[in-house]
Amino acid sequence: MPGLDRERIVALDKRRVWHPYTSMDEYAARVDPIVVVRAEGARLFDADGRSYLDANSSWWVASLGHNHPRLVAALERQARENCHSALAGMTHAPAAELAEALCSVAPRRASPPGHQAGPADHRPGLERVFFSDDGSTAVEVALKLAIQYWAQNGRPSRTRFVAPDGDFHGETIGATALGGVELFRRPFAGVLAECFHVPSPGDPAVSLETAIAALSDLLHRESDTISCVVVEPIVQGAAGMWMHDPAYLSAAREACDRHDVLLVADEVFSGYGRSGPMWACQHAGVVPDLLCTAKGFSGGMLPMAATLATERVFAGFLGGRERAFYYGHSFCGNPLGAAVALEVLRVYEEERVLERARPKAARIADAFSKLGALPGVARTRALGMIGALDLAGDAGYLADAGWRVYEEARRRGAVLRPLGNVIYVAPPLNIDDAELDALLAIVSESVAAVLGAGARGPA
Ligand SMILES: Cc1ncc(COP(=O)(O)O)c(C=O)c1O
Image (tube, rainbow, N blue to C red; front, side):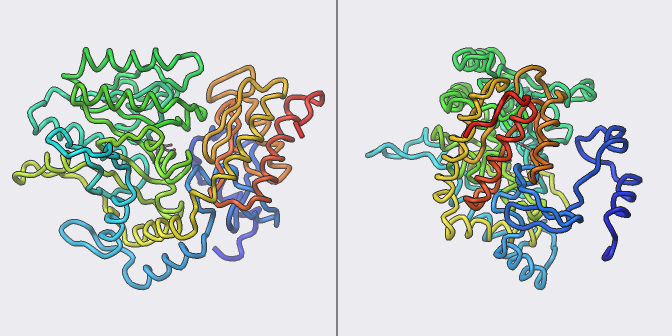
């Protein structure tokens, strides 16, 4: 609606819009929302003419920044040709080309020197792509693939899932069952699919050895009933940017191999260079059986996602109509999303996004390590283009201190949405150095302001 002024937008919003992850009575009573009118690079521009650094890339999607000109151009080009045609029994160039490009960058097992491929080498890589709409549906696809795979390949008792505590995999009922944040799961407890939650190696109270042993023991006892183990590799975002040793992922792969259980890597957040390499699985040299990607996959411009599968999983759905995967969203493989996602991969390669993010990641690590010196900061950590700190005291998603930091940061020109008492940044991978420094300075000043006048931000 052109010409709508800020006051009117907020009035309509407050009357009609039900916001995600928001306590609506608090929102209605107390929140004066930022009204975004434009977004570019790492910045959001509001209706009052102010701009804000987008510290979390708008819920982790804008890995290449907002409105990257090449992505906008790809979208415009594709919109003139074909905005949408279904993918059931038909195809189009953007989906076909994207699937090929995606498989070519997917995690691949490196063969040791002189190694001859043998019958045990059933996991050369991820060879098939199933498109869906967002992170949740990419995970839902993986769960349904896993269950149906076993149902029609001799192990119908394998209907349960495994996921580490703290994991987050999305909003559908299937993904909610995996969720390791109890607060998000609680209302649906009675209707969720069965999932074993195992101790997370990212939880500061759990040792790596304990986490590995718990997963191995569970698979040893229950593999007859388990279809797949689902993990957020290396970094558990919604748990509060919990990071863990790649040895856990290697151990999960080994335990899954030992018991022939499928391993699903949810790279919705960690993929596309967020943790450093293109995929977090690469920290451990692990190839999962199924890999979910979304968010940065479409440059954060359009809802678009994919679940990649090995040839072995794909082959488990061949051999007759009754064995097909009867699943598909209206917008599966949407040409607009596919054209943009293909351009994203080209930008990653041609603009050397991962390589150029490395020194930026080092700046983030340095700034967060200095923040650890502030009294009132319990711990800090960084990995790739993520930096995080825990404020001491009240923990959990409903903790309040993080929101005080949010207010301080907003006054200083950054949107720093906390996860409970966890303050973090996950900016676009290609954020300008000066803007990154400005963002890190705002984090430091805002945290220091909340922790009290006595605590000054580190230099
Ligand atoms: C690891 C992970 N998986 C899945 C999802 C769900 O993605 P979406 O919100 O696009 O449905 C998220 C969202 O934050 C996520 O972080």
